[in-house]
Amino acid sequence: MTQKSYNLDKVYTILRPLGENTILEVETKTTHIAPHHKYVEIKPKIARKKEALFQIWDFTKHFAFSAMIFSVLFFAMNFSAYKQIFQVKYNNLTGKTIQANVLQEYAKPAEVPAKQELLTVNKNPAIEKKNIPYMNLRVAPPDTRLIIPRINKNIPVVQVSDAALLKRDFDALEKDIQKGLENGVINYPGTSKPGEAGNIVITGHSSYFPWKPGRFKDVFAVLEEVKEGDKIIMFHNQKKYIYEVFSTEVVSPKNTEPLKQTKENILTLITCVPVGTDLNRLVVRAKLLSIES
Image 1 (cartoon, rainbow, N blue to C red):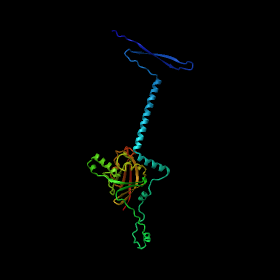
Image 2: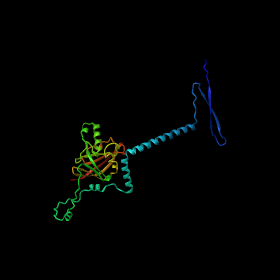
Image 3: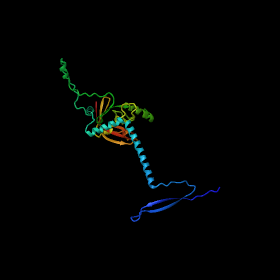
Image 4: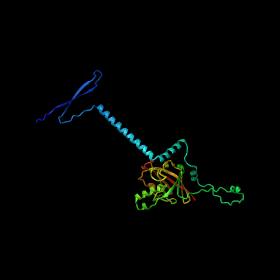
């Protein structure tokens, strides 16, 4: 059988304007298509542009929808933390303060010494009650606690064993830390303990999975509101340690400088930021001002 060959010509026309006196110029081009080639439709440029715009619009819609779903899930998982943040922002805009009067009193040093004078005994109970002088007694909590008046927080401080750190078993250390964070903030293993000299590092959650156990999953959600000059109080062994904030900064998780020991007696608070992520660390440092028994 003899194989036939074909010469197929596809003709298309380009119309283009020339000038004021000439309406259109017609130009004809011829394209040779070999017999073994498939028919290829040559789309006009306008059609190709419309198709590209449609693809961009379709991608934008899918991206916007995905972003909306992600945002809803993100804020749902971190609702408690962001509720605190929005409340603080609202209070700042309206001129209100969230510092509780009771916690503010903790930040003040004792001004009036306790009186130890003998009381006059009176048989009349009503008069005897009036004879009791002001004793200026402040009851110290029995456990170790961290008090931050600026953000209205009174938090138990949990000690975590250094055993896993000494063995360099970091998986076990992480489990110990997460277990301790269920009951408050933790004194980071390997740093000074409350009452000791050096750098006392305290870390706590800014937000955490809502299905995890514990009441302190967002205890440091508004730690960013703490400013230089604010007072922070720590109670330990019936003693009150008053600190004053001197720096706040955001650092990389790889930065271990905040964990290092110092010659000065300082308190370092660390939490994850932005809230709901672990991208960076907020570091608040405070220097020791006084100790009250």
